[in-house]
Amino acid sequence: METEFTGHRGFAWFWSHAVKYEGQREREKRQEVAAPVRGRALELGVGVGTNWQYLDPGVDYVGIEPDPYMRQRALENAKEDGRGFEVIDAVAEELPFNDAEFDTVFTTLTFCSVQQPQKALAEVMRVLKSGGEFRFFEHVLPDNRVLAPLFETITPAWKRIGGGCHPNRRTLHRINRAGFHVIGLDRDRVGPIPFVTGVARKP
Image (cartoon, rainbow, N blue to C red; front, side):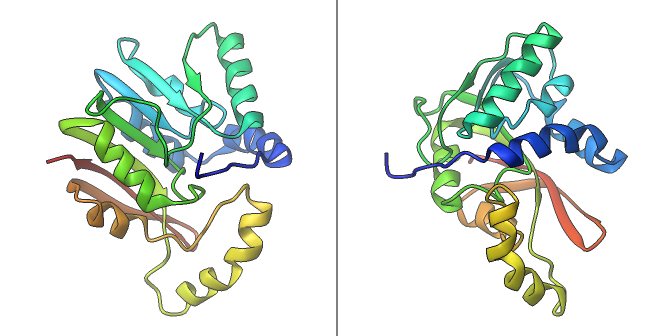
């Protein structure tokens, strides 16, 4: 495998507790992304399973999570809740699925930690059916001329303590570059951190 992933035991513990205290705005954005998902659906970066509560019961779901500590906590949470979600050990850059297999691919706060985001978006394009949707909620690099350099400066330290998170990602630019047609987009921020929530369609 070209892309190797190192697990983050400490961050998985932290995240499993932190998501319980997410603000109302973050919960609404997760619901906005996950609730409309239909058909055969793939979630990139399951984390601890935070988005499962928003999914329609009829969705034919599969998720990937490369971090073994996150994956373990997700499966434990699913068992406690009596749910049977399928979670596969895989990275977004090398999806173990057929071409045009999914109606929907979705992510929430995932592309900040994907090691090769452009390659991962090419994989999303590959596994989506024609006309399929890529739904996303991601934090991105600020446009502000003061904050942007600051986010670039703190990235090396931030990704070490934040489970591989890069606060300087230009994810929306990469989505457009991958050939998707963005059909819905909302910009928001929590403190100094900007977020984009949207829907992109495969031509």
